[in-house]
Length: 176
Image (cartoon, rainbow, N blue to C red; front, top):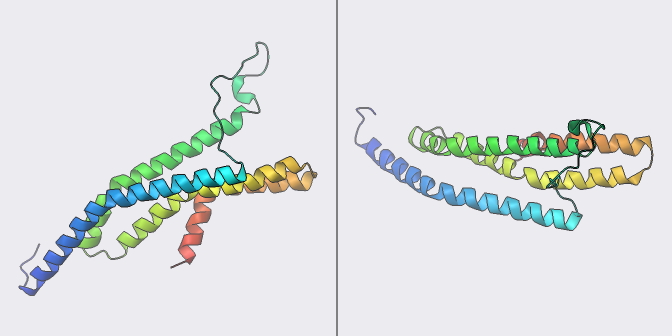
C-alpha cells in the first residue's frame, strides 16, 4: 500500500483480477495435473507391465528365521513406501504454498514465482511416470541374468529411479 498517483490504481485492479482468476483456476489446474499424472502412470504401467511395489495383505513370518525387515521382499516395499511418503509430503507443501505464490506473483509483482511454481508442480507430478519407465528398464536388466554387468546396470538404473525427481528437475531446468 502506498500513496500513489491514480495511474497505479489501474495496475492494482488488473493485479486484483489476475490474482482472483488464478486463485479460481488453481484447484482445477491441480486436479487436472493429478489426473493426467495418474492416467499416464497407469497407462505406462499397463504397457510396460511394471507396477510399483505391491503391498501384500500379509507377509508370512516363519519362526526361528530372519527378522521380517531383513527379508528380501520387504526392502522394495519399504523403499517404495518411503518414496511415496516423500512424494506426498512435497505435493502437500506445494499445494499449501500455492495461494501464497499466486498472491505474491500477482499482487507483489514477483514475476518469476508463478511460472517457477507451476514448473515445479509439473515436474513433481511427472515423477510416477518416470518411476514406471525406469522400473521397466531395471526389471528388464535384472531379469536378464547376463552377468555382473547387467546387475550393475540394474543397480545404477535403480539409483536413477530413486533420484528421478532430481532428473526431471534437471530436464525441466534446461527447457524454457
